[in-house]
Length: 298
View 1 (cartoon, rainbow, N blue to C red):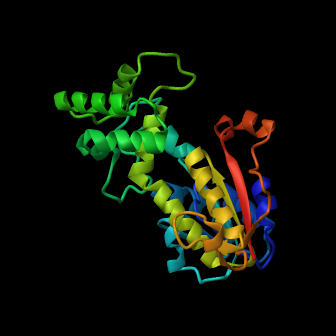
View 2: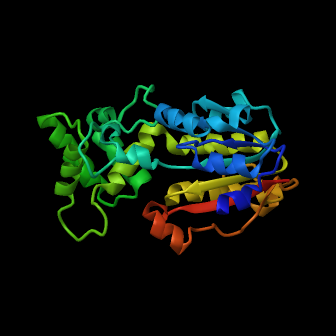
View 3: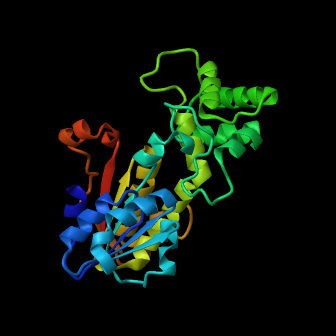
């Protein structure tokens, strides 16, 4: 409901769902923009493409579906033609449920974690081939794990004995490295998040995708982004704050006398992020960490 309110779909409008998934948001946008609204749906996951294609088939040529990364949408969508862009970030429920995808801590599966299974890099390669220093840096930077160096050291020692090729193997190594303390969540959660982000270049994709969205939106078009952890949310917030201000910064630091005046490019629809209602969290506990931020192009 909050996404539809943010995007304000209308008949004759054109929209992009850059993270199509099972097609739930796309279906809502198409219904709200009937009878003539158009939607581009994009996803890196071929399984998601298949599921969404089936779900959205009834909308006929009002929907066009592409396999690929959302940041590449400028390759097939004309500049300044969209009334709305939606990015629902992170891993999807079907990816978590299927053990063979390697995302889940709950069931044994191969260390894969690829959203796009046609790409070469897998979690197995990261865990078994990266240096201890690179692993530690990634686990700290993308997972915020304070024991990153101890965990990286444990991973390297374990893989010297036998290759780490399953989710349960990796989970057990992390648990042994973090035996101290009590945990509200699984002790390997942050490590899995970090490796998943690395494998799928999620933050790089988001950075490129925000610029893509700005270029494709027409004046008055809206960008809605749903994030699930602080790294993503901070990137969206920082990007938005940069777009709404009326000056550019020529260097790395904001020095008032060096500012270059310009017109704001976007405005915040809501200054604060929109969070799920208690009812939504009750119906879908995985939504508890979600935050929606909405910008409008000027």
